[in-house]
Length: 454
Image (tube, rainbow, N blue to C red; front, side):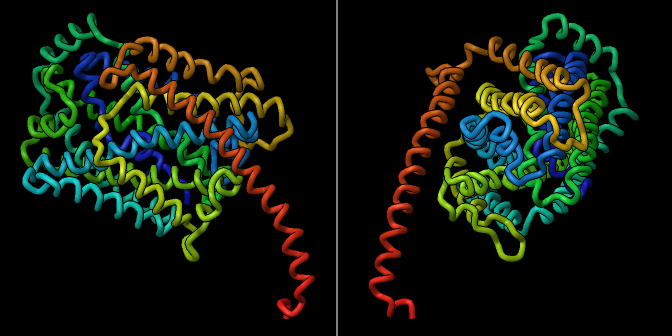
């Protein structure tokens, strides 16, 4: 992969369009939403992109953040990094087929009625798996085309809103009123979810052209694209005087209808479909490299490391993950921001700690890009993300899934990762012992029956 496809793939891993911002507008109004979308990248996205740039360019190995954490903090933490990522993927990857079906249902409800909706979601997963088996270059090039098709309707929306904006005073007054009573922390929590994923492309470092240069450029380009892709449409629509209270999940279609009529609403709905496909396909490319390196380290069966002869894609891992996410998809997980932020946030914090640990453990490691400030800077850059995660979790500690507190569920997932590490180490040790015992026995048997060697 080269720079432009990497920017496109990272955009889908992080954003996949401005979808998901509707709840921030509803909670805080336009002015506060724009403020949140500006501040959150400064405290969250830019530090993460800088951390990824240093680690990806200094350790450009397939497996990305798993390798970084294992090398900086040891095998136990490396295993937890992968476990937290794959556990979080259950909620993440079940979301996109549901969004895909939901946006189709926006203009063709009968097409997704009953079991047809499930069948369409399964078909989307299968298509993304086939797309991935063609290789990372195919995913990157496809992401560029999908990015263009996704962003064009929002560019039209912003242009029409700016040229024909009206009721600006009404919109500003409503936003100001909401800002005085805004749930700013709730809005920041949603923004954090919308700004997560900068590290995901690190797992395919072995498939990137000149990674020492490419990653830094790709991170910079992706940050600019994501921030602009969020800010521009919200700022443009703010001029239209649309009541922020009417914004709901999937509300961009309704906003498009108000601003530009039915054709623009249809284009935005189609863009939502493309965004779901692009995000699922790009994240599949990232997540499926983790079973490969785990298999190479002996934590999973070796078959997961098997690659396609032509594309080099770990096709067994791709199919296994597709089947796993396909099994989770009918459960209809609603997007759980607390669990997503908790699991993904903890894995990102491990990466920041690995950055600081490697500065101490491997001071002579060649670093084409360095986070400024020396070792102290490597420590300090992780402070703003840590503060955001703690603040968000404290703010939402009462959120529940059914009768169970979400933080309790998150703690159970973390505990399961710790238990699985020791279990897999025990199984790995027994396999090695069996091989050591079997080896001499096999050699003696062959010496006793030399005719078999002929």
